[in-house]
Structures are given as structure tokens and as C-alpha cells.
Image 1 (spheres, rainbow, N blue to C red):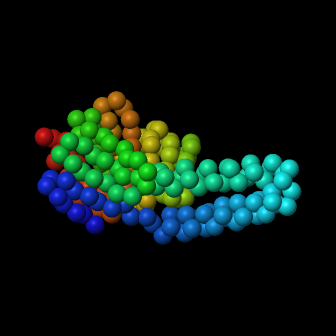
Image 2 (cartoon, rainbow, N blue to C red):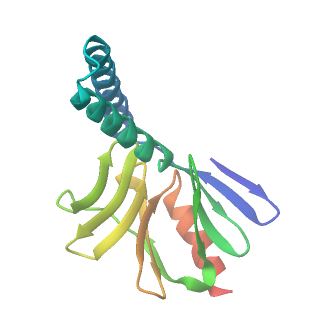
Length: 172
């Protein structure tokens, strides 16, 4: 959904069914592991391995959850991706190129998630090289290239309209 307010536009990030299912299932697995290991630790307070499992599961769940892409905001000065916690801003003056991008099934996930709370992290593709991804649905992805050579892949509910608006704002 696109919401406009004084030259600002907010566009939601759509999560694919795959992303939703993976997020729910992996979250349930993590909760199950935490529950089991908490019971093990309560039964044997010297079982520090259980504490390690709990810490790792909670850490992974929190890190991916807070980086989940929620919406994109186009302001007069910058492009902004809103995450559950924090945001990523890219000034229009720093953007050199915007285009649709379809991540290949074979794009290598260097560090990140391929479906758990979205497609988040560092990826490497044969076509474009290394990039940072914040997508909810790979079918709605687009690429932003910056003057510093950074590549970002984002997704929105309306990627073609988002690209069109970005190109208008970059030209100014």
C-alpha cells in the first residue's frame, strides 16, 4: 500500500508465503529448543550447554527479527527502509542506478537469512557480485547502486512504482 503525505511516500514490504511459513516454522523450532533447554537447565543447574543453546537461539531470533524489513519511505531527500528496529537511509544524491532485480536461486548467502524474517544479510550473485539484501519477497526485488559502489537489494509491494518514483527523485 502506498501512502502519500507532502511529497513523502510510504510503501509496505510484502512478505511472500515462503517467508511467512519459514519465519513461523523456524521461530517455533527456536522456541521449542529454548523451552527444552530451559527445562534441562532447571533440572541440572550445572548444565551450561543448555544455557549456551538458549543464548544462541534467543540471539538469532532477536537479530533477525529486529532486521526484518517492514516498509520503505521516500522523502524529498532520501530513500529509507524501516525495519522493526532501526532504519537504513540512502540519500538520493548517493544513488547512481535503480532497476528491477530478480535474485537467482543460486545467489550465495554469505551471511544472513534466506526466508527467516525475510531475505536479510550479505549475498553474492554471479550477475551483480556482493550485495546487502532486505527483502520480504524476491519476486518484488529491486537493486540500488550507490556512488560508493555499494549494492542494496530491497523489495516493496509495488516495486515498479517504487523504482519509477526513485528515478524521478534521483534526476532532480
